[in-house]
Length: 182
Image (cartoon, rainbow, N blue to C red):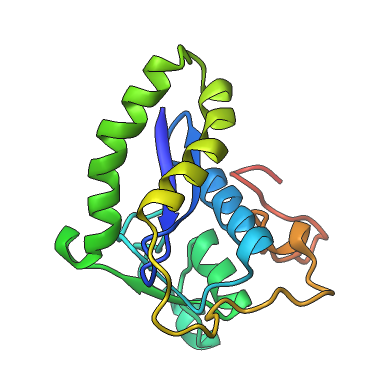
């Protein structure tokens, strides 16, 4: 299993954790959706440079003519929601979350084992209580009492935004191409 997670840099509070079979796009979409529903939208996300989080592709001629750059689905989502995407260039630059991973690799693994949990579903069910206990003990109050979380717009279509979307062009013969098929 792979653990995806996010921490509020201002407080050290774990805002979301999610076990997945592997680090994948769907996991990040689910993680970001859970954060948005619980806290609202962050103003910025500081993240590693994994290709799920930012596209490694160079702009094509069509991209350059259109004034666009290739984006991963996560980049697209962050751009649509007005969340600044800040890629880290070293593990040290992501200090707080890297320290959290060290703690989770020790503490969380032990607590899951003590609880006798052996499935991903069981581990994900265990996480809310763990997060609550962890935050009660280790999270700090923010220096500024004014929240930096942006409230979700009431008319935001979560299903539309937190989904994988691909653009296609209808050809002259009224067909589209998808994964090598017409």
